[in-house]
Amino acid sequence: MTAMMTILGPLVMGAAFGFLLQRGKVTSCNVIENQFRLRDFTVLKVMGTAIVVGGIGVLLLVDTGNTKYYVKYANLLAVALGAALFGVGMVVYGYCPGTALGAIATGSVHALVGALGMIAGAILYALSFDWLKAHVLNVWALGKVRLPDVTNIPDIAWFAALAVGAALFFWWVESREARQTRS
Image 1 (cartoon, rainbow, N blue to C red):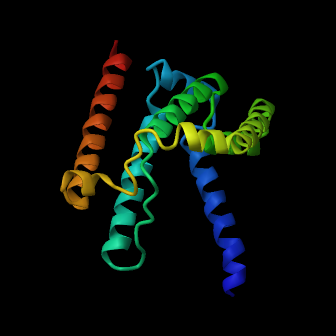
Image 2 (cartoon, one colour):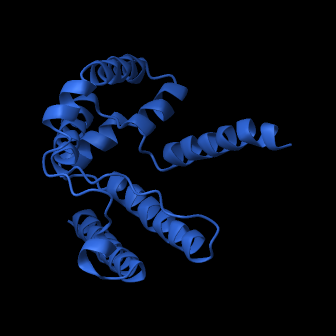
Image 3 (cartoon, helix red, strand yellow):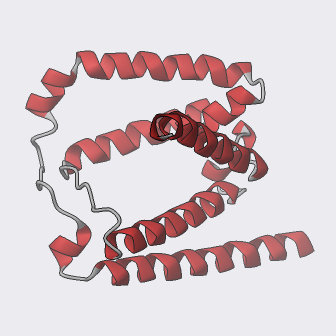
């Protein structure tokens, strides 16, 4: 049973995630490109909801002792460079990795070609890892820390602030879109 769940669990969760991405309309490169043009905030609404719900779920799992945090090294230069590269790639490509797979499942050849580019990029990253480790990963490296560790503000306060911030952002977007519809 456990071996079967090891295979079926991720497949079911992946299919559900892809279905929800499709239903949320974020498997369309036009929606993602319009997010970067500040014309359509569907992507931020979907991802903001996923981050808040997922974060609260993880917090509950940790607090009940059902899991523990796996804290990765905070290499801030690498994160900043990776985020910039990811953002540029997302604007040019029109997809993030998850939405690309959802778009491929709907038959998008454009997404398939870009996914091959992502694989090539992953191979280049792997081949250049020794150089990156020596010259990038050790710059501005804080070790295994989290915001609650650095700020002495408890996890629940960070998640509450995240939820309130997301709610205010959602309210602002909805009121903005309602004003544009009336105009």
